[in-house]
Length: 252
Image 1 (cartoon, helix red, strand yellow):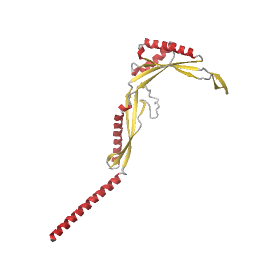
Image 2 (cartoon, one colour):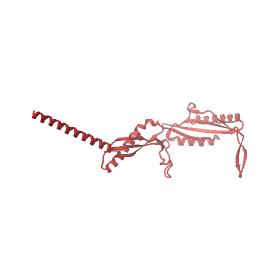
Image 3 (cartoon, helix red, strand yellow):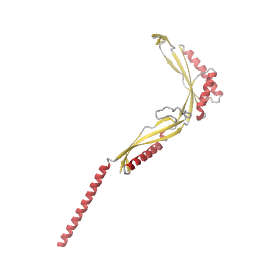
């Protein structure tokens, strides 16, 4: 009887000891986890990628102004036909030449106030202004700049002076977004590991992460968007895409 009592007491004591040990362990882990929440490091990860234009276009724009709208439309049509004839002569098929509807601006008022010799006077202005755009797709993206310059000079020599500009179309950002984010996260982890090593700790899991805005800037542009004196943007068909992600890591 006495042995059974001792056995029960022993089992009860061991159970109590194990329970207290487990309770202490859980409390320790809880306190450690709670304290670890304050041990974090915030880093930024930069990712950049050059993208090449998939399409290029050259736009020719010319305008007329005057008070007789029908006369202006006639002049615009004559010049448009001459410009199209020139483009056809250098190898552009008519189905590749895009014509925008003529844009007409009606100033409504024939006079506006202007300053002359320190005096504000009413000055006669043209009531109407027409603008016509002709767009062609560039045959070679890399030579678009040179082609646009040649077209502009040719039009001047033919008394068809026009405003000539070019534009580029780039891949959708969504197609490169996953790769950019993965690269920025990787670079952020490298920075975080350096901080962790300096603090004699190890880098843990991600606590929070935020992706910055994806921006596009000229390949030769600096941080503020300007071009350095020793750099000329000779490849406008190549752009730089960048993203900066901010990531908070736990330190263990």
